[in-house]
Image (cartoon, rainbow, N blue to C red; front, side):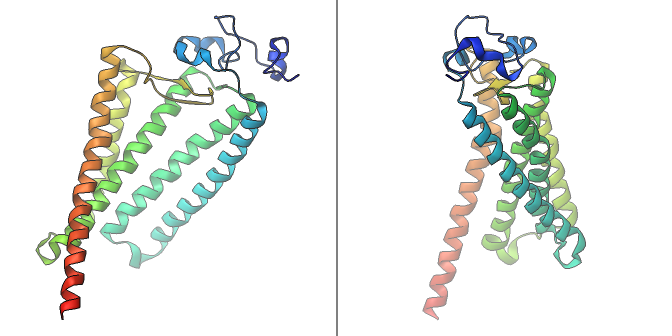
Length: 254
């Protein structure tokens, strides 16, 4: 019988049972100092088979190494190849740099927590981890919006469009980082919060607390970080596809 079937062997991995409800769940070996951060919703789920933690840790290690390597190569080639240092490519490199930093900070803790079978790095780092993941996600989204708008400017407006300059690209990248930091720092000051979630090996925004003030952050965040950028991208690509189809039609008629 394995430890997720027998409570008497729960602490076989060296971490004590801290479950205040007395049942047998995925929360049972979360450090006692973090229990105030965990929503009661997660107490209904049994612990995962250790095999799944191992597979998850292995998968994250492989993906993390590939991601770090690939994004590092993109940044390195950009910095060492003068002909590639165009304003448009600056946006692409910002996306690669952001992805590199996200994986650099986030995948090692995930692997460590998979080894322990729970979040083992303390409450403060849980908040930092969640903040970093949210911030990098926001930066990726806003950077993709800028890349899309640049393609719209080049393809749809053509010669009538204002060319993207190096200064303009840098300002767009700066906006992406500053705006993302602003949106993701609010939970540190009480507007929502960052908490452990799922199988307790990761942390994220609290989307379970049934409090209007807490939920208001999710509504506003979703509007500005997901819905707004999504609509801009859809709008831009609608006209990009339309312009490409019109150009192909003209070529066929010649």
